[in-house]
Image 1 (tube, rainbow, N blue to C red):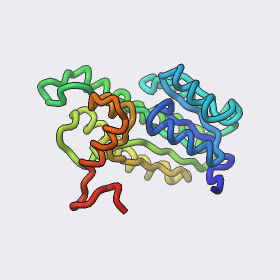
Image 2 (cartoon, rainbow, N blue to C red):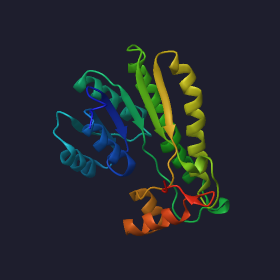
Image 3 (spheres, rainbow, N blue to C red):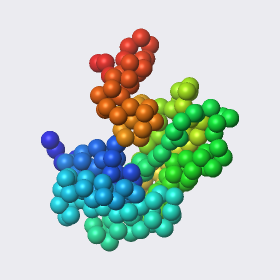
Length: 225
């Protein structure tokens, strides 16, 4: 397998578990140097130790609702590895419990936006700060299929992920002039700890079965070839 990311440096928020952890593993396999930025300190450090040596992957505590934490993560990448090529703004949370509007508290709605939207903003701002002088870079966000399909999903989560898509489309026009690509992915349900907690299912295999059953598209399945 070719090392498609040889020599690249990446910061991954929410990299201690789920999609972020899998991305960190893949990036390192492809030759990148990675900073995992997360609030799960013990888990994050354990993941780093399992993936590789401190020369290729490091952990930093980063609460994306704190602009200074995000700035510190970016500065750490530049200080340790000399640059930043990829920012993967992946950290996100969702609501638990009753998803209906009357059961949704204002503070809970705001908390989701603080992480899922304002956290993405901070990632973009500080990544652009160091990428613009280099006239290159890639900024990636994790949105969700919830941004285009609706149903029994918490309103705050749907609204926040829809905001990420709009932010991505607008930002790519500005930063594209500086040689920086901006994209987002909108995955369907993935058996991550966040989804397992939301569904109140502890067995990963059962979550995967549930996702497979509902992942229908015109009579087919999103996992079918």
